[in-house]
Each structure stands twice: as structure tokens, then as C-alpha cells.
Length: 123
Image (tube, rainbow, N blue to C red):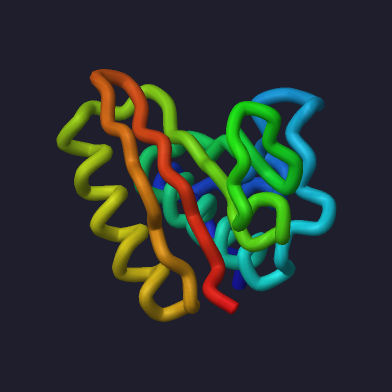
């Protein structure tokens, strides 16, 4: 029995639900546990909204000196085309799942059509 989306179609491959926003995003060296959590979160996001979750910052991050990013314990992700209400629901789901996986959701920004957040794996 295969898992299906809300439209009855088989779920897409991992690289279709968790995607970097550009080729410059480096996820090499990001904690395996954090990447597995992000992939689970991306599938939940896909099932909820039929949209991929985008990685906006991985291991090397030029715009800030995030120690968690440099050590491979931080990852930034973003949703697109969500209302603020949908974003708030997704953040609540993220917090619930993160608590079970040793991940902390850091700062989140909710705008009219997107939501971005920092995910951090605690050592």
C-alpha cells in the first residue's frame, strides 16, 4: 500500500517536497537527524498544502554568523502561498513535531503569502 496525497496521487520523491531555493544553498554537513526531521516536516507540509517546503539556508550562510548553521545544526525553511492563518497552523504543527524530534523552532516570520523559520537540532 502506497501513501497518497490529498488528491489520491502517490506522494512525490523527497527532492520534490524539500527543495533548496537556489543552487547556492548548501545542505552538505547538516545534521542527518535535522535533515530527516526537515523531510518529515516537508511531507506534512505537502500533505497539508500540496506545496513543497523550501530550504533557504543550510550549512554555510553568508548573511549571518549563525553558529548552529556553521556546526550543521541549523536549517532555515520557508513556505510559500500560505495565508497568515495557514502559517500559524503550520507553525503549531512544526512545534509539536519538533518537540518529539529534539528540534527547536527558532525565529519565525509570518507574512501575507509566506512563513519562514529557523530549525535547530539540539546536541
